[in-house]
Length: 356
Image 1 (cartoon, rainbow, N blue to C red):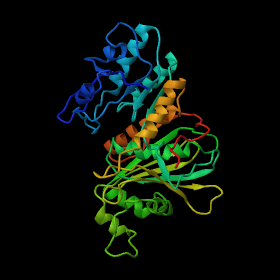
Image 2 (tube, rainbow, N blue to C red):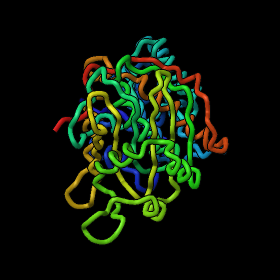
Image 3 (tube, rainbow, N blue to C red):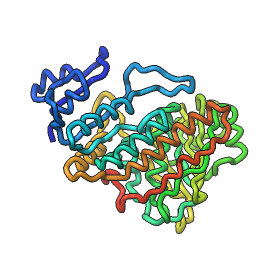
Image 4 (spheres, rainbow, N blue to C red):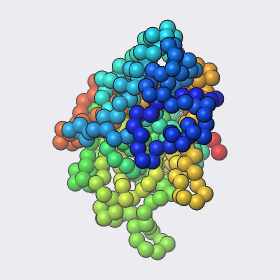
């Protein structure tokens, strides 16, 4: 698999593209998306497209969403497809767009034109500790993720952590009816009132490799509510209900954990079912951010076979949930009904997470 062309929208002081192009002259940088896809000619001249729209200097709207130009880039890609009379598979990194209508249009366009389309993050495909598969056809009554990060960014990763698991329940995915966000004092109030199950929260926390010790010493470092209030900065929760009654929660708890931990009530198990989506972050010495390798493997498989490794409907739904969580916060942390997220699909027979 060769990377033959590149379009870079913004070049910052830490840019890598120019150095890579100088080192690998077979990869050329072009001044536009159309020229990158046609290799400077008039017709599509590549076998696959990777669309990554983030990390640049882009404006934010009044809701705090960064207006990354993923949809605008996608439209330029599709124009080349239409002008060339043919198309190739496309992978779009992370959620489809900050704008739900645009995200839906991206999905609908891929279906209308018939090209393989895949999107999302590394969370569903990275290693798991323990390395377990959610059984297909499971009865799941409640699911939860404890993770870290910000709104309209890593909240998407938490939502994907949950979705790649619960989509495997009996009947497949049925869509989401509503979502409600909690932040700051409303978060702590919801925790105290039992809005989400404490046993699931504790099961997820027990999988964390980065749980901040609640106190000095080696014994009983698991946090109390007072410990969490002291450690966690600006907590955020998303609580939502699927059309079949399944309820899910994502907890962003910066200062308590730095990883993504999943738990669920699964039929046939007497205790909460839990695992961690393992992302070995670079530590400056020996560890590499190797969790991109599983993602690249799945993208390459799509290019070679012309078939997605996992359903893009997952990312369409988590894109809508991310936007819905933002909307709930913007509306004063009130419940936001989501009839537009009546997205039904069946999961792949086997998960695509990286086995050890």
